Amino acid sequence: MDAKLAAFVGVAALLTVTPGADMALVTRNALASGRRAALLTTLGINSGVLTWALASAVGLAALLRASAEAFTLLKLAGGAYLAVLGLQTLWQARGRRREAGAAPPAPPARRPPGAWAYRQGLVTNLLNPKIAVFYTAFLPQFIGPGDPVLARSLLLAGIHNVMGVAWLSAYAYLVTRAGDVLRRPRVRRLLDRVTGSVLVALGVRLAAAGR
Image (tube, rainbow, N blue to C red; front, side, top):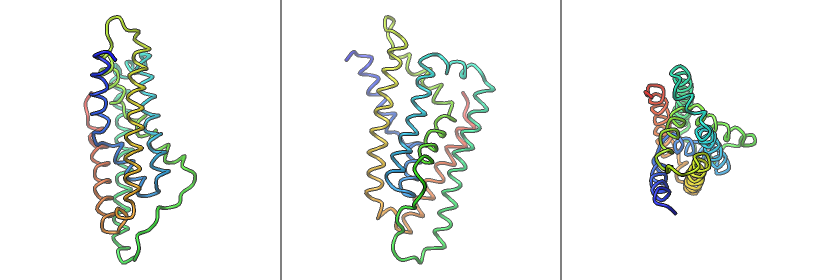
């Protein structure tokens, strides 16, 4: 492993475990619908990230970086989407407060096949142009003068995505393993409020962010 690749692995690992919208969304779906939904959310998230990484590797993301109008429209759509998810979670917390007298914790809600969870993760990331800018600005720092740019970019993006899948899958497992405790009415209401507030705050931050 060359020095640049080793440095990338260290930085990418740190960025992967940093809390953000992805972990908030996985937490939300793990508690609402169980491990399968959380894992499908994880796959959707990383599919979106990989799409941006591939676009960056072939130079398409640079076009978005150069277009202020496209960037603004996409970030507003992404911010609104995160805010809506957060408001839905806060509304659920309010509803659970009315049901506080219910005895045992409710099991995960039954939902149709998990395409909805995959779509949530995918759309959340596809509507975040900051990922495109991140890859366009970040990956070149770890590509040497003599390296094949496309192959090296794809390698770095692949490493980052494998880390993301591994971390979010492990995180989803831990959340669902602690599900009985986390679904206790008082704990669940608190988590819903925190998760909902985080998603709304991240949505506002994305919509207000500069380039």
